[in-house]
Image (cartoon, rainbow, N blue to C red; front, top):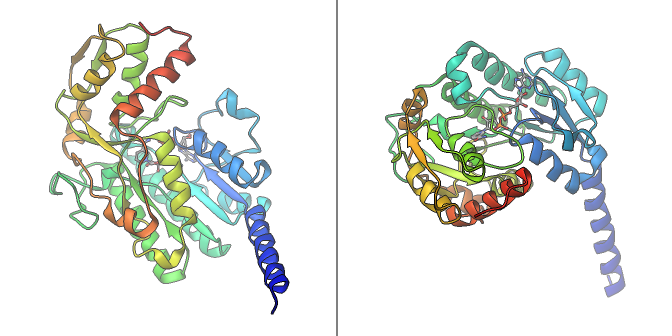
Length: 342
Ligand SMILES: NC(=O)c1ccc[n+]([C@@H]2O[C@H](COP(=O)([O-])OP(=O)(O)OC[C@H]3O[C@@H](n4cnc5c(N)ncnc54)[C@H](O)[C@@H]3O)[C@@H](O)[C@H]2O)c1
């Protein structure tokens, strides 16, 4: 074949790739949550507005997201409803974010069990029934427990969590790997650390202090932290988290040795270190520490995470460290609240 023949083949291959991308039909469960509200926007930009169907359950979509519909109401514990939405919108990919998080889960373990386990089971079963191309299910550092090594926690380690949330997350990972092996369903997931963002408030997790604290700082109010000042936890800024999900979803499957259970991280810090960083912008910021029931949850989680498997298998690299995250958070929250920084 001559050079122009080669070019024709190349061009039609690019059109084919373009078509594949355009034809993607994505369902996002839990799209009004902390991750979903930002992931939905990123997916719509990447794959086309009409090709991403956002589902809401309890919370109404934030005002700035309303126009980013179509929005569909879906309770993931209702198997028939899950099937109906997949059929109606001809879905081939699911980002399954609907969940009850750690702190809320300890207040209502029965609800956490139903939503996290039954919901995930329904999504996986539907994935097999409709031969879906891919199912993304975030996991969490909550899969670890008090017996797990706390520093630089490896990908393969003891998974004996002591919260209902953690128990459902371990089961979700094991089920994801099982459905891949048994049915060939391409399930992928990563263990997010605490996520920090300014657009949508967090949904009841143990790391929520690291978001709330910025609102108090910018408004010039004293903050009462529900964790001890020396509690180290792994964390990540939301732009990195969104990129991680999309990069893992798009990674070539041949490169993946893990599937539903990648460790990932970006930074680790304690409340005291976060406060010191915020005081570089707001020197008078006052904080007191009154640990509550969430301290016990935090004490059962790692200080820091080894994410070398994610780095090797799909090229994971975080962009934001503590100073870069604090700089972006402070500026965006001050703008959002219409406040000038001192
Ligand atoms: N935010 C974090 O710090 C963090 C950390 C680790 C892992 N994760 C994981 O990421 C995923 C998304 O978390 P998030 O922070 O966006 O949570 P979130 O609490 O902010 O949002 C969860 C969403 O699930 C929806 N939901 C609850 N019950 C439902 C039901 N029965 N049917 C359908 N929807 C229902 C809620 O309305 C909400 O929109 C979860 O799997 C969570 O375990 C989050």
